[in-house]
Length: 97
Image (cartoon, rainbow, N blue to C red):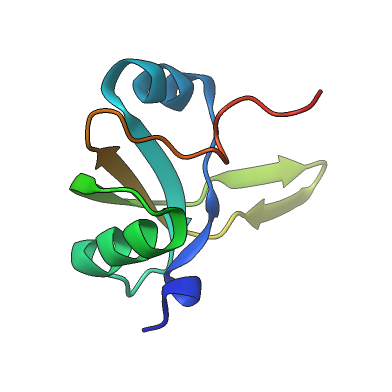
């Protein structure tokens, strides 16, 4: 599996922002077939950081309703990556407003 196929994008919420500031944890939406080792290698190669640990979680899509129409958001896999002390990913660190 290629490293660009493993990580689909960043996941940014207020709760994950606090985890990033306090515990050096960054979260990504990843391919459903990617293992923890694949995620760790992809993050290390893409962002030039050292990964200490990876936790993965399958998130079920919510059922949403608009009027009489009912639909479902897709399921996805989330990875929370803990970095070594002193490392950080600039993608998540403040940007231009």
